Length: 413
Image (cartoon, rainbow, N blue to C red; front, top):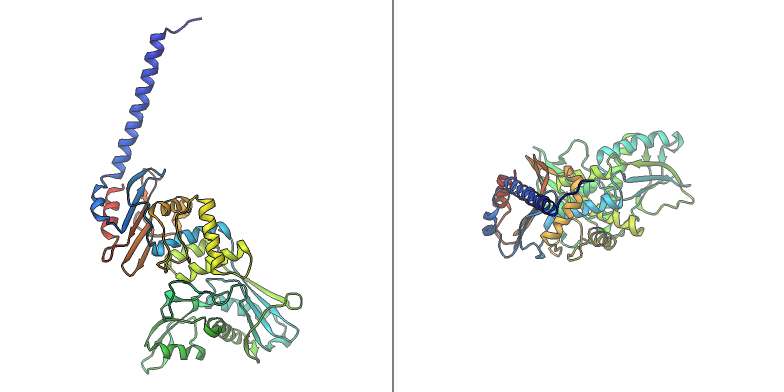
């Protein structure tokens, strides 16, 4: 048997070390060539700001103030989306149930569907017209059961304005709890969208707003948003020949006595809901998802505290982050605080779904805007491999994310 001398073994060992060192150096140089020069970011990141940029493997390319707790604004929706995908499942679909009781009352039970819109109500009314026997085309009361969510759900940061971003949450809501209207040439209020009639029920609210056109919200006071859902349902049921001769009222399903005649299943999966959440940055949708996730994890009724607990537990146990504060799911509250480093961990977990985000060129991202707050987080595609991840939290009054994003897009090849 031939043997190799000790000097040869040492020489071979040294060669291998040099080869590995050279290979690592090449990789480092290659990474730098991909990333370009990010040093110019230093002067743009103030004491109340934070930026973190990483490659697709999590290697940090730039970091400043990454552990500082800052207001994320709507970039918090990335965590909310991740919680919904994990808790409810990407293929989960919201349902709305319809029961008939022994007194021929039609009972509607909602489960928080954030996309229960006029087009869906038309489908529902069409099916109900075939499920109700001819002798029961005349029903008594239309009973609305919104008990799957607690009432009211008070969202920190939401005010009593008429603006859509202040829309309240609820288990049985339609059209995002909003009414879109305008005044015609004769000065009469009419609907601003062809698929939705302007109901007399909403006119007082519209007149009180003092607006000539726009989209205003329905409030949670006196069950206004839930009752509006009932009035809109009655309109579409009547279009299908179903006459409600009684009143519209709040009530409960008695599952042991009432007969389920139809279960409407949303055409949108949670994955599709998340895509629309990012497309419209809809605060109502975000907190509907959060409360629904809380109800799924901890049982009904859904409450904001259960949703926040579901998100916090998921972040702590699933993502191993615990230095943050979440009080709601949309980012409208300034009480929400999180670091760029923790938001980057959330991006890392969300990476398999990044294509659901809003896209512009090579960037997939979520922006966030509050007064004197400008944030952005997401991914920049890389032709050489997986996408870069970036977090930009600007909490300095008067500044925006724009100059930082310009540098990132110019240097992350």
